Image (cartoon, rainbow, N blue to C red):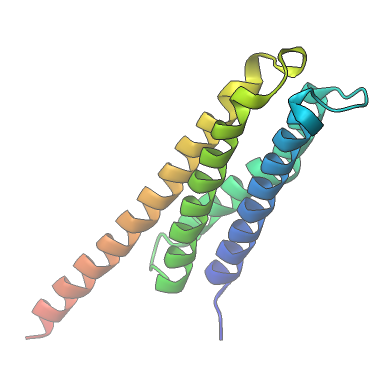
Length: 149
């Protein structure tokens, strides 16, 4: 049976996949057909804030919740899922960074360039903390085995 930490990490993975897909599709929408921008009026700042608040930040919060739940013991499945979540976030934002130069100048604002880098750093932090948790759990298991002898 799966533990709570595993379910929360699966939720984090789902949110990061959804966030990456939404960001890629939104940035491609801003490029528009023939790289001239979307054919309709859009407020890119408002849409970007909605995407971040719907899936980006909740995905990182769920990842942090898993780390908070694992204070006493580490669930390997949950940490492996968090590593995958961090990798998905890094790769998705790397794709978004490659799309940014194609966006029409009329739709570029200050945060449009910075958001992918912020979430790349977040994905790297999630993956690094998860790897550290795996290392810490393995090290503590080795100590327990040495004490039994």
